[in-house]
Amino acid sequence: MDPITLAGITAVALNEGVRFLYDQAGEVLRNFRERRAATTSLPAELFEGAPGELVADPERVAALEPELRLLRRDLGEYAQGVDPVDPRDAEVLALVDGLRRTLEAVYGTPIVFRGESRPEDGSRIRGGVEVKEVRGYVAGIRARTAASGDLTGSVRADSVEEGGRAVGVDLGGDSG
Image (cartoon, rainbow, N blue to C red; front, side):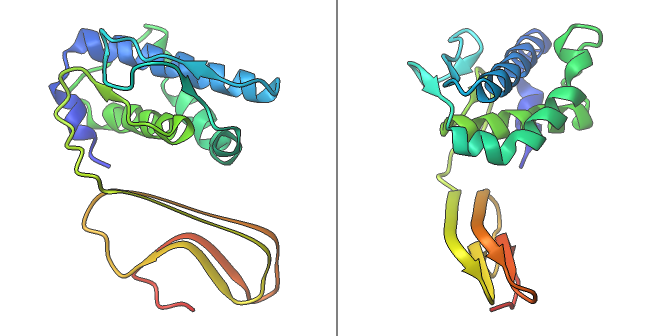
C-alpha cells in the first residue's frame, strides 16, 4: 500500500473523503448486521470513476468486518471533524488508505480520490480456496515474491487438522 498518493489531495477534499469513507463503513456494517444489501454511489466531486451504484459483497463484509470496525474507530475523530486530516501526516494517511482499500475489497472496485496520482497498473491479485478439510497446506495465493500491488487471499475451511496450515497469502514461503 502506498498512502503517499493521498498526500497530493487538497486538505478539504481529503477531509470530506474521510467523512464519506467513514460513513460508508458504518452503512456497510449496519446493513450487514441487518442482513440487507449495502449500496452506494461515489460522489463525483470527491472520487474518480466508478459511476453508478456499488453493491457490497456480504461475504467480503463478513471476512473484513474486524478491519472495517477498527479502521472506522481509528478515524472517528477525523471523520467527525474533531481533528482535521493533515495531508502530510503519514500515519493518518495510512489509516485512510487502509479504510479505502478495505471498502474497495467490499465493493469490488477501486476508490480513487479526485486529483490523486494513484497508478492503476493492474497489479491486483485475488485468490481464494474453499475446502471442507485441510490436512496439509493450502493457500489462497502463494508466490515467491511480490514487488508491489494489492494481494487479497482467502481460505475457507470447515476444519484444519492438527499440523495443517491454511494461509490467505504466502509470500516467499517454502511450505507445501
